[in-house]
Image (cartoon, rainbow over all chains, first blue to last red; front, side, top):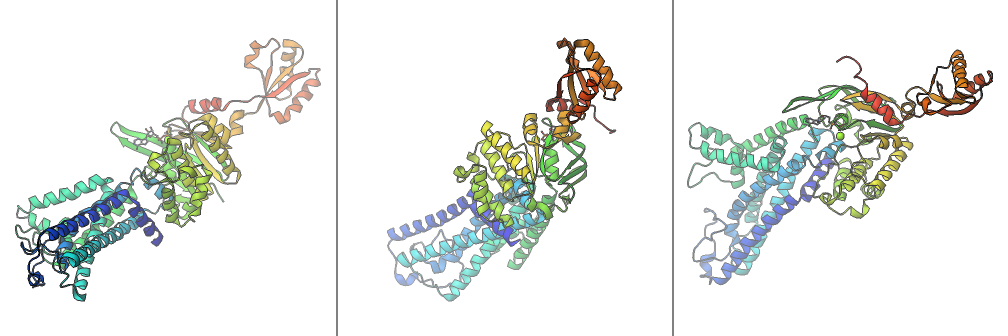
Amino acid sequence: MTRLVGTELRRFFARRTVRGLLAFALGLVAFINVVQFARAGTTPATAPQSVTFSNPGSEPVSPFVTSEPQDRRPKVGGTFEGTIRGVNMALVVLAFVAGATLLAADYGASLGTQLIFEPRRVRLFAAKWLAAGIGAALLTLAVLTAAGAAQWVISAARGSTAGVDAAWLGHRAVDELRGAGACALAAMLALAVSAFTRRTVGTVAALFGALIAVRFLLAVSWGRTVVRLSPTNALWGVAYGRFESKNVDFFGGLHTMAGAWFLTLVWAAATLVAGAWWFTRQEIR
Amino acid sequence: MGAAITVEGLRKEYSSRHGKVVALGGLDLTVPVGGVFGFLGANGAGKTTAIRAIVGHLRPSGGTVSVLDHEVPGQLAKVIDRVGALVEQPAFFPSFTGERNLELLARSRGFPLRRVDEVLHTVNLSERADSRFSTYSLGMRQRLGVAAVLLKDPELLILDEPANGLDPPGILEMRTLLRRLGAEGRTVFVSSHILSEVEQTADRLGIIAHGRAVATGTVREFLAGGVSRVRVRVAGGADATDAARQVLQAAGYPSTSAPDAHDDPDGALVVELAIERADEVTRALAQHDLWVRELSPIERTLEDAFLAATAEPEAGGQ
Ligand SMILES: Nc1ncnc2c1ncn2[C@@H]1O[C@H](COP(=O)(O)OP(=O)(O)O)[C@@H](O)[C@H]1O
Ligand SMILES: [Mg+2]
């Protein structure tokens, strides 16, 4: 089984879609940091004392907006938590696509040959499912760490690295792990769903369908319960890491991290079982 | 050890827009261990469907399949390392190179990676091993498919029309390869709709038509048409020929005038007898002062055999 998972991980990382998504994510991170760096360079710095991040316990800010309009200098100590949050939302979607493609793109491609080497379909399916999760988690950690490193570099060069200490590193590591977990679950969900759709676009359409449905369901009274229990909702909660939102009750009443994790894991397990069952019944070309 | 492949009463119905298509209507097939077994049938006869059932890719509507004495699909995993199969179109990931495709397969079962280079060499694909599969010609795809089959160094090879898309030199190489594999003591189960292809590679034949096996046997038996026959010509014209026929019939050798006798002023006889026993004919005739001028085995072409087998009304009840 280890060998099979290892093989599927290699397959995952050899996929052009996965490599493309990684390049895209790293490109995005680089772009944001270059923009921040350039803006910091053209805007004269305000007084250094105002730069120090006065209350680290306060609400973190989005990576795209610096804390004070007057001060555009990068300060990784204050902004990186928000960066993780923002980048993670994008990464969850990318992980979903990557997980879907690992299985979906192989229908009509090499799946038939793979089954002649490993006819135990539940094993093969489970190996792919695990590989999608592990692969997505590793990619997420790489992208988030790269984002942190880049912010640290530009902060050190043009801003301030105040607030970066062992405790801070520990907290951000936990944030990154949460993000990696969210992306792993997204990839696993997508892979399991792909057993039914057999196509990457089908799986991605299912995701967007669910997201749109959530929007509409929030408007009706009984819909809130559905939304609260929906996999996308729980997954978003895990990825975002917080449940308060300014505009709407987006999470349909889901408001604890533990609840979000629990729901996501239940959904992951349920789709794993359903997908594996369906996979064993399928006729493969 | 029993048969390499045993198929009993295999049924498969596909439901399509136009109703049910019976691809296999109770196929029975026994492939003995060793040698090349040609699985011959016209397009749409059900060869691919049968092969997909044998390797566990589809769920039959009925019947049983076993491979190397293990029931499919339940116990297939136990023998899968001894079985290589190429089903219809070679199935590989298009944006991976040929080498990468094989490497992933080898890794999944822990086969040594040097096998990848070896088999690529065997099928003459080393030069293009680094090209993406999507850039391969039909023939190259077929070769990669065969390379994947060889990766396991299998004792049973199941090949669905492996000559598809190959050019004449490629076909010749494939034929040589299949014969070599068969001669090495492996069992090669190869399907084809091209008679001459099978005739030149196979030791045994199974003919499938409309989802049922209509005939099986050695190629030699097919060529003899089940009965061995010799053509006998005696000196002395039509009278001598008539006399010879009476002598042979009296001696217990069923004899008839050759159907093409009218082309031949002297006439000839067709005697149902193996060529190995031809001396009995010459002795019987000589005892009656009839002298043999020609004595030759009658060869049936495989095409005759195939047409005869597939033209026969379907045997057995529904
Ligand atoms: N997936 C399918 N759906 C419907 N009919 C099919 C399918 N696959 C094969 N068939 C039909 O089953 C019959 C046997 O096909 P096949 O096994 O591919 O024949 P062969 O390989 O001997 O050419 C044909 O009539 C074919 O049209
Ligand atoms: Mg076919």
